[in-house]
Length: 169
Image (tube, rainbow, N blue to C red; front, side, top):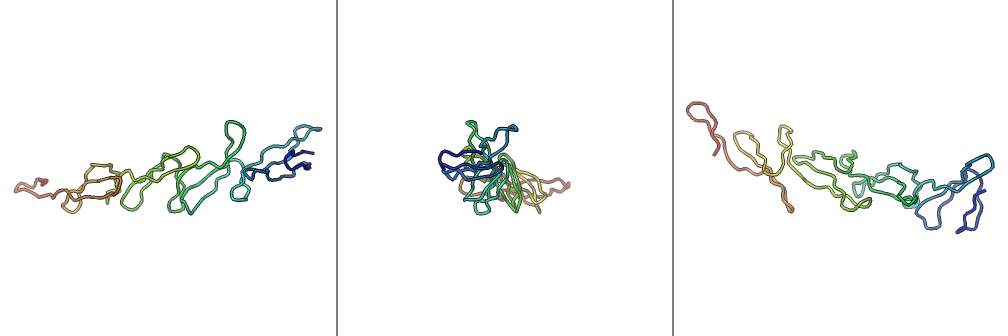
């Protein structure tokens, strides 16, 4: 069998158990005809077992996570991206939300992401970034992205001269 020193217990082939620290679980696996070995089977996430590379959604924080192997051979739940409207967006991906464009940014490797507004979406569905302008119903609007607010700001009007050419004011 597979012996766990911390729990002072021996486990049979294919049997699994939670690690004493509550962060992951083990499986007793057959390596050769005569040899069994204790292997990490995956992570524990609030007491629930999560297989390696399995994705888990956190609807409260609008994020999703995966159980991943770290460089030292241990495993941990690592954040993989943001969620919006029942869709997953990986770190670095963009998505439209109402009249604005958002980006999923990693703020602490494997631990935290942030949903950041990076632009506007015109009524025609065009992606616009800070300072970009578009026309709508004879008006000129500018995409303003600031730390404390975001807006489609009216910056001018279009008029037609006697020859049919548009003039911005």
